[in-house]
Image (cartoon, rainbow, N blue to C red):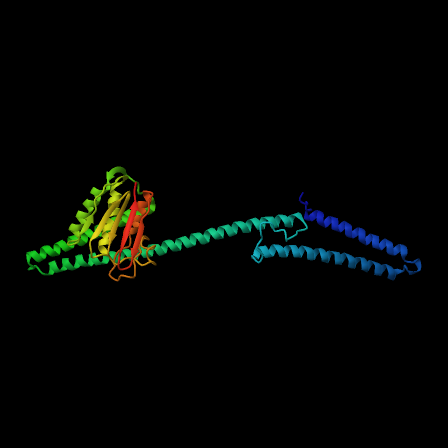
Amino acid sequence: MKEQKPTFTKFVMVRLIVMVMVVTLLYSIAMIFTPMEYQNSTFHIVLFLLSQFIILTWVYMNAKEVHRELRNVEKYLSGVSKPKASNTSVQFFVREFEDINRSLIQTFKRMRKKEKEKRKYTAKIKLKNRQRSDMLSAIAHEFRNPIAAIMGYAQTLTDDEDIPPKLRSKFLHKIYNNGEKIDELLSRLLLWNSFESGEQKLQISKFDMRPLIREIAINLEDKYKGRKIRVAEGSLMVHADKALMDIVIKNLIENALKYSKEEVEVKIVGRRVLVIDKGVGISSKNIEKVTKKFFRTDEHSWDNSMGLGLAIVKQILKLHHTVLHIESEENKGSTFSFEIS
């Protein structure tokens, strides 16, 4: 059973009574054992002064003990001492100081918890600010080229009214293509925002992946004139969000076209879809980073992408409870694949 500490009042009263009894006892002993012929006024004065000295010494010692307790409290308040859970090393002689100690320990625990939460929150805010800055930089970087192209072609058309019809048509086509690119970039940003906010919901349906892949390949061959996308034979019936799977396949094929000048191949093996290119490949240090949002490799100076394509693919596959696998070798090519049920 834990020892019950006295209150400060009881502590003082007990010690005062003990002190009075000790002084009285000592005074009585001195009176009894001192011969009568020596009990003169000087004797009584000395005895009185001695008793006063004992009282003062007792008061001083108790004051030091109280001071020591107050120093413990001061240490806690100043943060010099960090109270532990048990705190058995600190002994208090009265209940009030023990209660103060217990309250201070609880207060310090709450303060440390709050401080830890504050540091986490601050770090989170700094990370968000850094990500926001990176995002704005990536957006500005990606939008600069098509906007500059649109302004350039439009300025040329405005300044020169005698441009031949064929060249005018070519410039207008360039303006349209760059406007389409800006629209696609905005769509990616909106899609990514829906992922981060948790608003994106799956619209599951049953369909065959190969016709979808073939349609995407035809459209991209038309967009990237002179490029060949070979879709191997095979069928894969899946339960998935068709619109999001369209984005996955399109992003993977476009990524392959971007980093390869040769033919891009799409295969279906079992329940796995593979997009294979023979391009520049990805270095080992970047293979884990390419699916992070706004990541742009510094290995290719011509890479002006916003760094959202593979990040969007990763998020869509995550919603479908699967993952993107990447196998790559520099200057030999890459294979991006995923399983889907």
